[in-house]
Amino acid sequence: VQLQASGGGLVQAGDSLRLSCAASGPSIGTYAMGWFLRAPGKEREFVAAIALAVGSTYYADSVKGRFTISRDDAKNTVYLQMNSLKPEDTAVYYCAMKGGRAANWRSYDTAYWGQGTLVTVSS
Image (cartoon, rainbow, N blue to C red; front, side, top):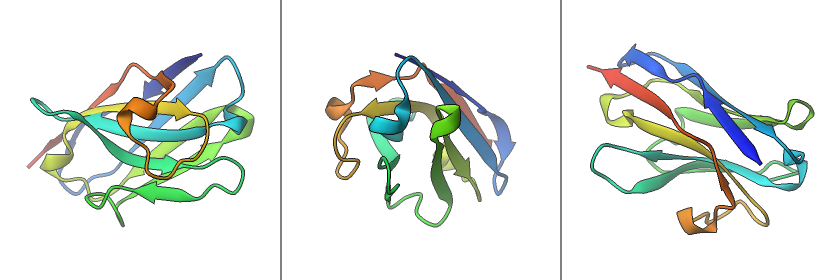
């Protein structure tokens, strides 16, 4: 499985970005999909996840109301719409795939990782 993340860049505080993660290999339709971030000098942490089928979504408290995760199984792609960006959102963002439930997703639960895309938010 390969997960190719894209859409990162340099933006100003308050701007929006949409990250995409295209999967090659098996269909993502039977997997939970998620996004994690790693800020400079910090551990990788959970951002958002979306379950398969019903598509229940889960978010870190820090992004609730600002970020939206979605999936298009026909395109084998998951998205992260990021609005009202803040300087503290600056990080490398990784898409992730796992079997089973999307809820309570810990980094070590992840089956596959994408390569990461850098988001930099200037104040």
